[in-house]
Image (tube, rainbow, N blue to C red; front, side):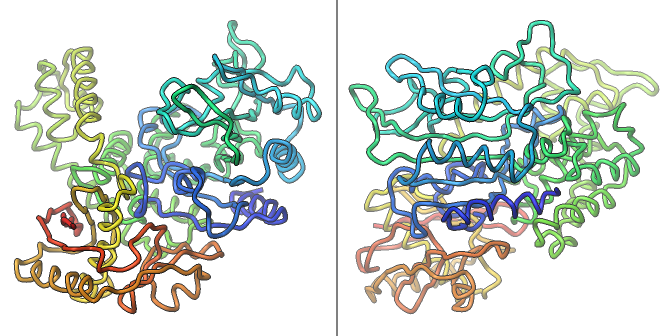
Length: 582
């Protein structure tokens, strides 16, 4: 079973159980995201998990392309990747534990033919006022021997957007989860390990499936049961395939092995002797391919900075190897499930090759800062100088050392940690996208972005499209692809177009349409052609048609004014407009 067949088997399994397939949301979220990237299948569904009715019903299924920047430094072991596909099924106030648990077991053991003796279960063990999840335990006991079921605490078997129960604000929902682990025979336990996934840290057990049961809401007096309970299942495609193929190293599965072979050939790196380096190259270049395909380009800020970091870390491990054939191998393999990669291959390849050349220049420029190292020797520099080479020029500690420089690595690590804390604090609000809240001004701003989007396309053509947004009650932030700064006259014209549509008091409504029909009427939006189903299209009179989740005002006249405050250059043909609405 390959990746394509596994995806198709999963979707079909839940469609037979009355689930509607929903589209794969963009990897770079445009509407209502909470991070720079879509990081799970659940993320685009948060409004519906919180109670909003989903237009396609109460039973949903999909596979979601996902990226987690927090895992960059973890890559190098046998299981972590930054980019992954997440299989997901959801019940929005419909079925619950007694349906989900048997279905999960049937999918794993019947559809995927995983051996039952290698599967182990964890359930929530309780915390303070929240009871142990005995319901899930009893359901699992009907399926597997009790000794294969382990209880675990809130750090392992609890989900909420804020983490453990004590960190949850009043009003937030959360609940216990149950997880399925696959045990690999080729990994030996450490002496301190016990043969269950809770008390083993050696990597013998791999989590392959996770069903969250959202059944609680925090109040000022503690936790109460929700009247409508939700199920949120997530299963990583890469990990499920590792279990199916019984490969404890996901980089040895059929999904990665052609990429690894290309790296071995092009970089002259034997995988057995250079596992960490090859894994970093394989993961980071694969993730970069997907990010570029999603419209991200290397830069020194936000998404572009993450992409640049991925590429430079892979270049550090590649040395002087030719990257072009490795990119070809990645696209050839991944296009089996994501065909846009082959359609955009030339652009993807050129972006990576250009960044590789730019990085070589960066290295030469960095050498000029402090002078070259001694020939056939080393030069000692202080940690502050080394950190400047990192923070200003993007050189990793490994790259700095390979130029022949030595420095106090502990002090450098301390500077890195301090820098990371400052970056997280400064970027706490900056990196959020979509709507910050559902206040009156924020909803007005959301509707105004649709008018702005259409006005830009009226002036500059339909190749222009939105690449991101962030809307608060204070201002609207709108990102789009464009290769130059707008002139003052152009900004004035955009304001005039948007203002005229506001004054026309156009009606705003949405319709659920099949994807093909939505594309047929030229509704703006990013549609994934691999999946069928209905999408939510908002109409603003006869002026704007755009795929969007909402919410919006019902008439444009409720927006009193629209003013562009400033514009910014995001690099490589990406611009940002800030505007204010009242």
